[in-house]
Amino acid sequence: MTTIRKAALVPLGLKAADDKAKAGLALDLTLPVGAAEAITVQTPLPGRPVKPVLVPPTEVKQRSVHTLEGRATLIHAICHIELNAIDLACDIVWRFPGMPDLFYVQWAQIAKEEALHFSLLRDHLRQMGYEYGDFPAHNGLWEMAEKTKGDLLARLALVPRTLEARGLDASPPIKKKLVQAGDVRAGEILDVILRDEIGHVAVGNRWFGYLCEQLNLDPVQTYAELAEKYDAPRLRGPFNLDARRKAGFTEAELKALQD
Image 1: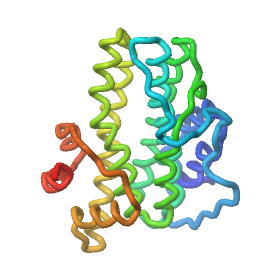
Image 2 (image 1 turned 180 degrees about the vertical axis):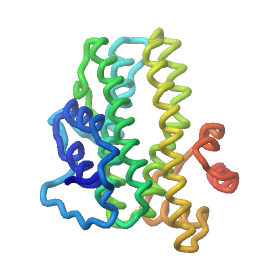
Image 3 (image 1 turned 60 degrees about the vertical axis):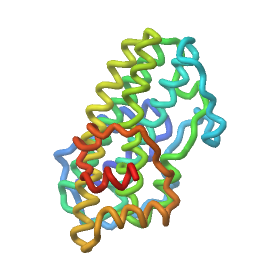
């Protein structure tokens, strides 16, 4: 019988975006976890679609949301983040053994929710006359996953608690822009994503705190050391402090962030 950890390799390895999302939604959380399994993988991961073309972040053009193409470009960028988020959640499930069973169940559930987010955005793009892959995108999220593939503490610190938590700050102003430009449906989808992402970041915070406690480390100091070691992007405000508190950031962490 397969396990949740092995099952996570299925969506992670698929190349076609629609197939990846479908497999992510189909993850079975009732499978045995297999927390102690030593899993080896021979094929390169993650599976990637031919499109979008991946370019440096500076080459991803910003367009006015007051045009259809401009709104589609912005929604496409978020759609790309959500596809990457499926891979990130699946990767943390299979790659790091020895955590409590709940760790793997929670991340597999996150993979399912990221697949839903991608599907909602992809369907909206199609209603606008575009497809996922029609615009260039960047690879920043997965580059940090590569950097931290040998260090679970760093992965938790710098992917869910840094890069994905940035979405908590960015989502409300993006929603406001899109709704003001007349795209009410995009605003509704972003509400779903923000609600779920608060929970996803909370899972990252929970397990980062768990490992810090196990290793007798100070979370604030440890985060700063890992951000420097792995050259994490420096976060700048404004910050969505309400959402970050709901996601489990402590007042000491929020103070360090603002300082």
